Length: 150
Image (cartoon, rainbow, N blue to C red; front, top):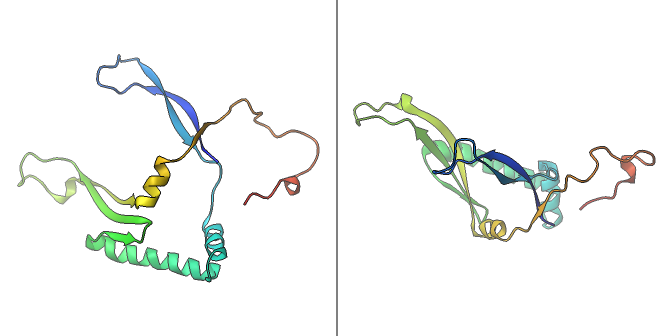
């Protein structure tokens, strides 16, 4: 399976671009969602844990993140990667002029581990076809006729 993308036209933001110049860029398109329940079931199927056990561990990771990130600590979650709280601010002319009110962006950064970085580098891509009809074909079956995707 490949990551699907579509093309969008956006303003050319390169340094020497003309004011009205536009370029086409690839934008990934999601093909669905794997929610927490499904995630827990998939992990449980390949381990001795139950889906409830897996959910308990995920909740525990969130608990630790909420405890450690405000303390300025980076949290490593095995080979998955690292979580870190980071800040962004407006600048001040001098150190004396700087105050905490200039801090504007507070967010959590996730840095993937080596396996996820390799996965991203090796992803195959496929252009999303817009030739397919936007509406489902008429006549015949409903949702029960759809194949099960694992």
